[in-house]
Length: 90
Image (cartoon, rainbow, N blue to C red; front, side):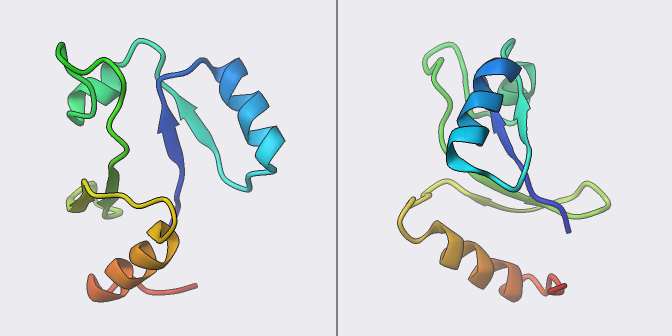
């Protein structure tokens, strides 16, 4: 399993942010918002991305979309959902 976050900020901005928080996962940069538009997290009415989480299989199938992300509980919520989906732990 791999996990990462995606951002509409530049790579330089994301690098500074990741370093400031000492993140141990990558932040993918999408400043032109092409991928963000494809996944529906930005549109003409909402240029700032929604904070949604996508769980995608190794085969590229979208298994789940969490559109109600709560920053305080998201880690635990994600672990629970991965178990429900049968995603194996390392």
